Image 1 (tube, rainbow, N blue to C red):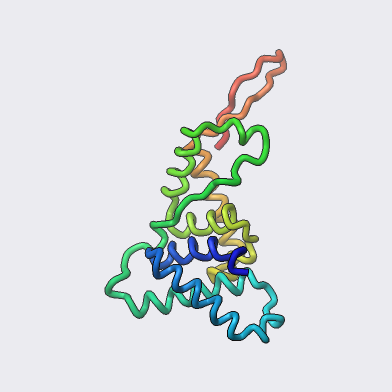
Image 2 (image 1 turned 30 degrees about the vertical axis):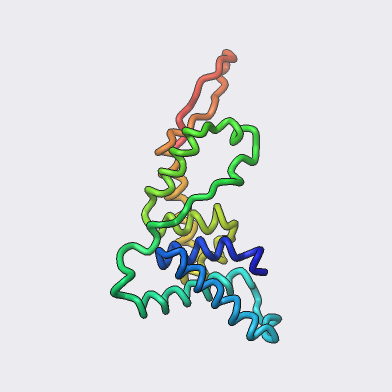
Amino acid sequence: MYLHFGKKLNLFAVSLVRSKEIAEELVEDVFVKLWAGRHRIIEIENITVYLYVSVKNQALNKLSQKAKELVAAPFDYLDTAIDEFASDPYDLMITSEMMAQMQHSIESLPPRCKMIFKLVREDGLKYKEVAEILNISVNTIDVQMAIAVKKICTALQIQKPVKHSHGVQTARKEI
């Protein structure tokens, strides 16, 4: 289970506590506690949500203990991992420059919007799961995702070919 969730939970924890070492410790603690109570695992409805909420709670406890050391925006150090981005031929045409622009535009999103975008797009969580993890409504997730996608597309000035009636293709700016 650690092999499946460990990396994503570590990235999530780093985004909360801004320290790789503390994040690793938090995630390990969550798995140790899960193992200690393994006889109750069958009672857990959604293990993904359970693990993310556990890491979030551990991080909040750690932050309250270390409030003097850890201040400022907790989401500023999220790493962008867009390894699985190219899934269709259009995506494969994206240049390294455009990938860098995309990464920059994601990092430029407001903290909450960035967190939601990364949990949905990079970690592959469902809107409902993210809503449970962050204790917000699914509608808020939907709105934040729309904002993120619009800002990223605007920053990248996404162009899609448009075929005119006379057969000539031009590019149309998508917003």
